[in-house]
Length: 363
Image 1 (cartoon, rainbow, N blue to C red):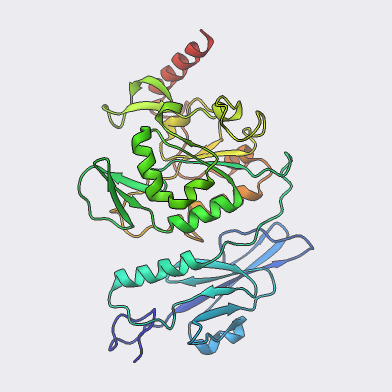
Image 2: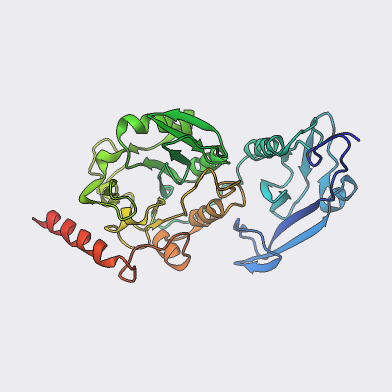
């Protein structure tokens, strides 16, 4: 039996697979929004249906998918309704109708699960981004500003030797495990947002981390801020009494407090800015609902697909792209960890930091 993506050895039978095709059928002349798949529902002006069938090449034509040519190793989606998605082992790749999806269905043998995972990653990273969505933003044609943290969002930095998933780099005494699907996620972000990186680590550590995680994509960043751009509170975090508590104040970006920032004061505001950080305390002095706090990525917790097409963070940001107002959208659609408010069990600690910081600003 010839090996393919779904078989581990030449003698082991290939298990029966399920193929899921999600169709977004427009009910008007407007475009359908991209969103997470569901069995059947209405989203705005779109009717969403999901079809599931046993996976075999004979079933592909009936689903609008051409039989792959072994020489080209391609699958073609002949889906004219708009968006379509194929779910492969739980990971979703997306393309617009009649565009090729890179496929390794007819690839050579895969000996173990690690090889299988690598091949799946190749599929994801070869997939082009979904089509751009024309959005009336209410503040001109400028893209929304997306500010990404590094450690905990795009990678996991550990001080001691660890066996984890993902691409590994070592520098400044730490191992950095790049999060699965990071490259294709970054391509998506740069395509749909104005992107900056803001980390609370020092510059000499940040430069190496950015080189490792972003590679050549770092040249697309609007800014890359380190610890020196954060506000030091004079106290340490509750989670680690040896770790200084820094704040990331978005007003520094909105007010263009650094002359080198490539925009005008007022171009960005709470309506079109989103901070993505795994530490909620860093945003306690920002206006509410201007940040989301994904649960931190840990390299040793198993395979993670949050950044991949169909992953929770990727899908959430796809909705932020088309939102009229970022702050309102985040308010109505909570994500990840809760923001720190007066209902937090440690509010007394954080409220003192806020009061002290505000006094310093008005002094």
